[in-house]
Length: 301
Image 1 (cartoon, helix red, strand yellow):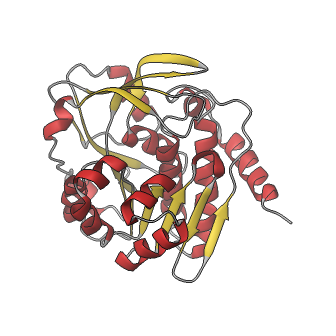
Image 2 (image 1 turned 60 degrees about the vertical axis):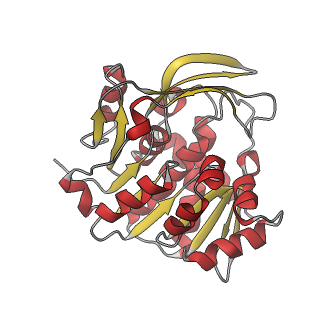
């Protein structure tokens, strides 16, 4: 069995979503799910998560069929379920109901083989769990983290502690403003970089992404999508493709970080074209490369 290139810790969930363009009930979701499927186009990820005894076997079979290692997925109790909807502003999901199930008392325990992984993605979960996982990885080469407003409100100090230990921080624009209490994204990114990350990437939904280092700035365009059905998981798809590409190349130079951002934006744009993981399931490497080249053209002048 091939060793995992990348360890992803986060949620594997069952979602029910409604948008102005349709609805999907009891479909596969969760940050670790979207990011691992996106990463699987480039490398071999392993997931650290918990699902309930009620979790459909076909969802786990899908992950395995993509070459994703599920040794780190624990099974107990009830599954994590999220129900939400989007209005015409598709940048923000409104939560109707969250059932944490066995995720409420999840204590990640990495399979021995995962502790040697060089690449780590700490998806949006409790910062204490992010620290716990990081403590189990022996010699990480690159650590990327994501978070959300809930943890900014409830565990800000722990969150700042995690940020001091990572290489790349991912936030969306409203989270960046909230965390660093400033309306100015350049200032927020500067504050983030002072904590220790080499890169701060601020996702702006349909308006692309911004990357900051201490002495450079990169602006990634959005893709002009005509067909948007469901933006759920786009941020996680972005993150998975981003770190998956870096794990494939083994190169974390700024030039490759910029390319990784465009691959992340490419996969995220496909993800928005259908509900759940339906679009990523039928996505081909050829489609990815074609759209990647379109992104390069959008930025060319």
